[in-house]
Structure formats: structure tokens, C-alpha cells
Amino acid sequence: MPRTDEQNVAIRAATRDMIRTAAVREFAARGFSAANIRGIAAEAGLSTGSIYRHYATKEDLFDELLTQAAAGLGAAAERLAGPGRPLDLVRAFAATYLVDLQGDRGEAEFFMVINQGFTSDTPPGTTARLAAAHTSLWRAFADLVRRGQEEGQFAGGDAERLTVAFFAMLSGLTTLRLALGGDLPLPELDLVLRHLTGGDR
Image (cartoon, rainbow, N blue to C red; front, side, top):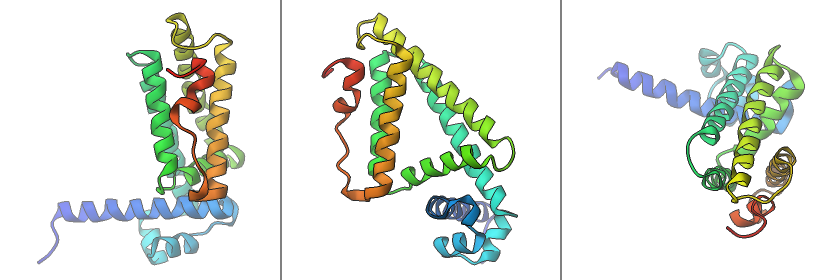
């Protein structure tokens, strides 16, 4: 019995997900320049022809990953800028990040791929696009810290510097997760937030 259109769409979407997951691992392990479609196909358990049916070049695949990253950063910024108690919004953001980092779904590798987008500017304009998304997230977080300070939920200090310290910690944890894998004991949420809250809250 031939497949329905819905089944074909589902299969195509599942295959693209497999390709993207494999590409993240390949780009993270080898870097954009050294990665190739053959390696991505091997990681995905597919033929190179299957990859080319979905992506004409590795640049197209890389660009889709970075477009996905920029969209994710933008969505996170919108959540942080939305309604809610500042401490609750920050806790939700940090908790989600830690859960993703603890899992084995490639989040740490994806972070490395985003960094490659900054350094390679492939395709041209990628660096500016990612920088704009990062800036939106950064500003939303710093504004949230200021609001939380006004409401007595966060410790005093320059909101931008506190934001720098917070994201530097997350970046460091991500790098350690890449290096140590499952052997890395991630800190508890309250410890991650302590420099913002000034203690347990």
C-alpha cells in the first residue's frame, strides 16, 4: 500500500531531524571547515544521496542550524521580556538550560556550532544575524535583572555586569560538559542563581 502524503511529510521531517542532529555532532567534533557531507551521512546512518536530497551543500545545512539557533535565542528573549515575576522567569530560564545540558540531546554541541557561526561568518552575514539575536537575549536578561532589583528579588550591582557573569557561568558549564560529558556534576539551580539573588531564594 503506498504511503499517504501525511506519512511522506512525517518521514521527511524525521529524516531532516536525523540529519540536523548528526550535523551538529559532526560540526562540533570537526569544525565547519573539516566537516563534510560524507561524515554527516555516516553519523546519521544515511547515504550521502539522502543528505543531498534535503540539503544541496553543507553550507545550506549549517545555515539552517544557525537560523534555528537565532530563532531559539529570539524566543528566549521574548519569554524573558514577557509578563511574570523576574525571579521566576530567570529561574525557569536557568532550569531549562541546566536540564538541556544534563541531557544527551546535543545541546552542548549545538552551543559549539553557534560559536563557529560567530567565527566563520558562513554564509556571509551569519555573524551579524547571531549577534543581533544574542543582543536581544542579553538586553532582555539585563532589563529583567534591573526590574528584579527594583522589586527586591535580586542583589544590587550593575545589571549588565551581573548578566555577563551569569552567561559566562553558563558558557563555562557548557564547555565543561563538552569536555567531561556525563562525568560533569552540574551545580544545583540555586547555586547557579546565587550571585543574582545574593543567597537562596
